[in-house]
Amino acid sequence: MSGSPASENSIPSPPPEAPPAGPRQLPRRWRRNWGEQDRRLLEGPRSRWAEFKSLLHIVWEFLAGFRELHFIGPCVTVFGSARFPPGHPYYELGRQVGAEIARLGFNVMTGGGPGIMEAANRGAQEAGGHSIGCNIILPKEQSPNNYIDRLISFHYFFIRKVMLVKYSQAFVILPGGYGTLDEAFEAATLVQTGKMHEFPIIFMGVKYWHPLFDFIRNGMAQAKTIDPDDIERFLLTDSIDELRAGLEQTPFKLFAGKPLPERRWWLGE
Image 1 (tube, rainbow, N blue to C red):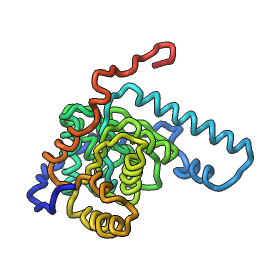
Image 2 (cartoon, helix red, strand yellow; image 1 turned 30 degrees about the vertical axis):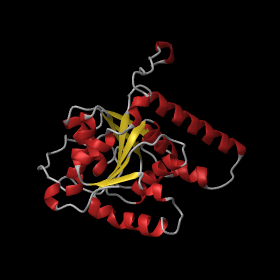
Image 3 (cartoon, rainbow, N blue to C red; image 1 turned 180 degrees about the horizontal axis):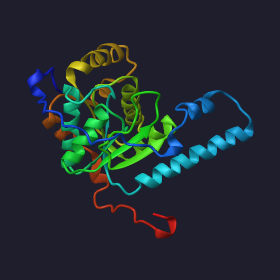
């Protein structure tokens, strides 16, 4: 773990630009009661037919996600709040992060919404990279941003989380709320338990995350609910140079020289 609280001048804030005109519209089939599918799935036992239909829906949504992302190549996923507007220091930091990831040759993947997700997608496009959004419909905040080259929408949170993890070789965690913490520690748990390679997990926004790291170090580690080595799974920094160095530690060499899957016309690819 590295980094120390940085001054405001350490995060340059370029003037925000006006986004493209008009909101991105979702296909009509996605404009529905935002929580209906999750509520039905989690409401307890139902009829066998209802459970079977949910299972088919889940399998189909997984299949659609796999098909959409099968050929994109290595990604870095950026997590962060939907609530920071353009011009906010954390939004502008997100733009820098997205641009740096793109310059390193990775696709930039986010949850596809506004705020930091928009900033990272925007930075990727501004740097000439490829920008991906895995969106989910929520009662507020979560509408697709206008800086996405490929948009995939999901009904179920857990399917979306699988996609954000499955195709990524590193995770960058910018300031955020419950969802950001959920996604960050999901990735940390998968690495800790050996379910996933030792992909970098990089927290940015030292001032924001400092109390959390104090709790991890002085609370969890001292109580022995985690091992001391588990703290070192994270990099905490405000530095784009340290971000770049961390991303260069991705185990992409495991996949070096391995060509992307070939598209099969007879599968509609």
